[in-house]
Length: 239
Image (tube, rainbow, N blue to C red; front, side, top):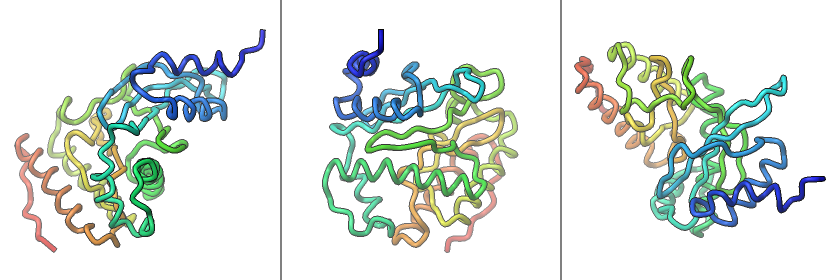
C-alpha cells in the first residue's frame, strides 16, 4: 500500500506540543525534498528554538544523522532579533513583522554558517533552510553517539591550546567579514579537544554599525571563561 501524504506527516505530530502547524508543514516539505528521512530525537527544547536529530540516507544507503533546528514562531523574542538584524547591511529594508523577522533570522544563520565555513572556520556545515527551519551537519566526536558537548559541559584537557584554537577560529571569522556576537562556553562545542563554533543567527557583517561592539563582547566572554581555567590571557588593545 502506498504511503500517503497524511501518513507521512503523522511522524511530525508526535511532537505537536513542541512545534506548530507551520513547522510541521515545513518539515514535511524538507523531508519530501530528500533532505532527511525522519526526525530521530530531541536534543534541546528551548523557548526560542528546538533542536532535533534527524536521519538521512548516506551515499551507500546507510542512515546518517543531521541537525534540525526549528525556531519557535510564538515564543521567539523577535524584538531582540530585530535589534541585531536592523544593523545588518544585507537586510536594511526589512520590515518589522514578527514572522518575517524570524524567517530572516533563520536565513541569516544559514548564510553566516556558509560564509564562515567557506573561510575555513570550524563550524557545522549548513545543509538547507526554509522559513523557520534550518538543517545542518551533526557534530559528534569519535565514538560519540550524542552530539559533541558544549564547552561549558566538557572543559578541555589543555585549556591553553584550546583557547588559542578558539582565538584562531575567531580570527578566521573576522577575516571572512563576520563578528559572531554571542560567543561563549554555551556556543562552542568541544569536539575531541577541538573547538567548533555554533549558533550563528546573531552573527553580523563587519560593516554593521555594531560590529566592533560584538567583536569586543566575544573576546571578553571567551577571555573571562578561560581565565577561570587558569589560562594566561594576553592584554587586548581596544580599537
